[in-house]
Image (cartoon, rainbow, N blue to C red; front, side, top):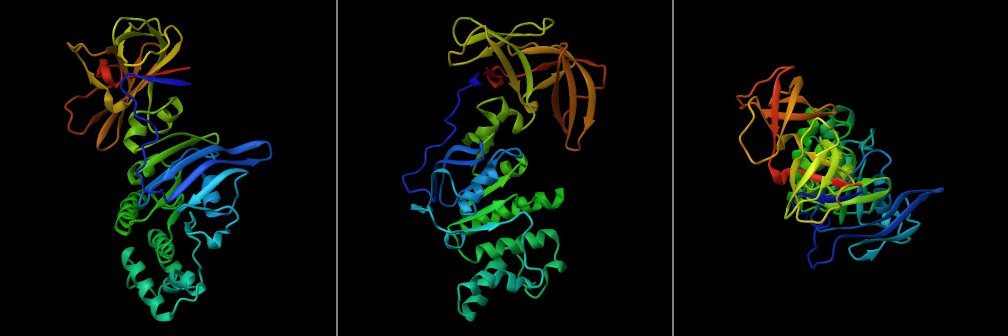
Length: 378
């Protein structure tokens, strides 16, 4: 599916600085029988960057992480870390540390011994171990809990022990496999802020695999969206959310209000989108590109881009009539499910400070800025 936006689209992969990237993935392929779990994936991660690989189950993101860690090997392509090929390098000799979803703490060891384990394996002097473990525990705010067992810690504290154990070895890269999946929603949100703060404070290079959109958006400097083994788009959270490259990315990164139809030709930048629903009028759209005319197209809008009113606004921006079907109170905002024409139901959000109120059955008008609409073409 090709995309032609009603606003300029930036490159999905931002240009990298001249300094060599910490991670350089070059066309890796991983097959499971006849199925390509990872299909010619390439990307780079800058030093000190928090880079998230986001996608649904089965997208191939965990296979990419495991190839970085050395637990799997690519059938084609190459993995480089700090400019060095990882071909044939076993996991224990790679400059990476993996933080598992389940934390993988040793239940019979104290917090101190869990964090010190890697240092002891490297035969670091006892005095240096005490100093380095203390520094790591200070960074994750667990100093004073060295003698506790994992079973005496909360889920968030166990997660921080696992992170300290990775930090203490001073790896070039920390790999995070669904790091907050085992936490409840409130603790997950708190840990998102803490984890990002620790990453920035220590200048860590992190690669995080997750299927949680909010988590990736909150913590990442850049996001890569994967689906069916391929990397569809790479960019900052704002870029990927506001300028998705196709309908899958648009839907996966949040609510996508959609209207099927086709594009009609017109002069200049302004064109006319004709909804497939015969009850709806033509909608003006704006594009600097030269999209195909007459073929199937989908107009897409985010809920926060839409304004709702009871009276038809006097404006040159697009306006459509609608009917409120459901009102959902969500604390800081209210969600309205509005039927547009016969076949589309859009989500519209108003903030807690809005004076607008509506009830099921109310007839309303939805409006959006001409530049906000995005068109996707098959």
